[in-house]
Amino acid sequence: MTGTRSSAPSSPSAGEPQGSAREREIVEARVVVTSPGRNFVTLKLVTRSGVYGLGDATLNGRELAVASYLQDHVVPNLIGRDAGRIEDTWQFLHRGAYWRRGPVTMTAIAAVDVALWDILGKMAGLPLYRLLGGRSREGALVYGHANGRDIGEASDAVGGFLEQGFLAVRAQCGVPGVKKAYGISSGKAYEPAESELPAETVWNTPRYLETAPKLFERLRADHGSQVELLHDVHHRLSPIEAARLARDLEPYRLFWLEDATPAENQQAFELIRQHSVTALAVGEVFNSIWDCKHLIERQLIDYIRTTIVHGGGISHVRRLADFAALYQVRTGFHGATDLSPVTMGAALHFDTWVPNFGIQEYMFHSEETDAVFPHDYALREGRLHVGDTPGHGVDLDEALAAKYPYAPKQLPVARLEDGSMWDW
Ligand code: EZ4
Ligand code: CO
View (cartoon, rainbow, N blue to C red):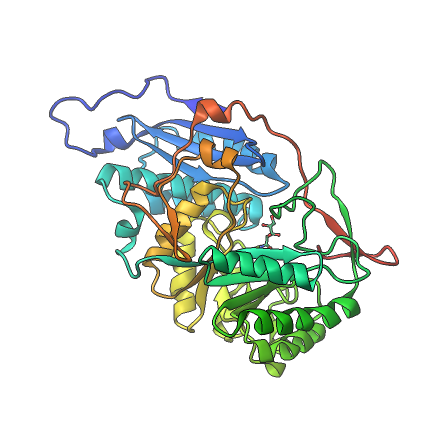
């Protein structure tokens, strides 16, 4: 899918200053959908001088909605614009749509925003973290995903991450009597969107509430007090159940307990806070500062997980992070494999700069994905390090991408044992 202006990219004309408005004009915008192991949507913007920028636009299980939003409604507005007007373009797309917020809109805006920051970096000859304000740390602490069908298997998986040098690990395990619990995959790597139509999973709150504290008791016994341990409830509990779990997990000092209860009602977290000092994280499904304003102002959370691709890009998430810093809330960006290497690259530059950094989620992408998106970030001793390539440092091999056509996949759903729909 593509949109172009009649004149193709050309080299800058003699006498024109480097990075002039004419050189910065966006002359081509392409939406690339590819499935190297899983689906990714990428926006490529090209300027008259031939510099291009890439933005991730992947919304797991709803990919083509964002592709259409971009291709049909955003691309016609981009051709002819000055790629240097990052803030104005953000405001134009956000205010101009009239219909603000929501995952589809904010993911589409994020793709444009990240592509424009990438272009700015390439034109300036600077890596993105330098544009944001420079380095605050050497590397970004990351956490891996350990899971097992039972507690023993999950503990072995945590041990595997520690052997690889990870300093922080998220742990999930199966719940006795519950078929297909969250976080446990049939394959080796955890990959939630497994089938064309949603897989049906089962949920049982009392059994889960019995199992989770036992898992962390075992992990501390097996692996000691140093490793940072994290856990994701994936929105399954009511506020009072979440409060009980947070209290029961206190002895095991989690780095955080994630998505303990849904947060459409931000006041729900007040109940958890009243009962526990376990650190709380939420926000991978948020897409705007307004989704977490109360949570942050009332100091109901410790980490905000909203990341660049689903949160309106660098321009909006930077505001969110600055606001969070006022309340000592730190960042802990979502980083599952459905966020493409383009998001991971942009997020790592952000993590390298942002003063109130907490941690970065990191799951290895497949070899096919890494080949389609060559990048310069690298894992060393439990931290991810960005390179000094101008922009965000992630590229797209379009010829290779074309070999992996879109393959429809949806996220699972969850039901209680009596058949009632539940939160997945
Ligand atoms: O289920 O990214 O913390 N990580 C997560 C993820 C999400 C998927 C949804 O697409 O909860 O695994
Ligand atoms: Co999560």
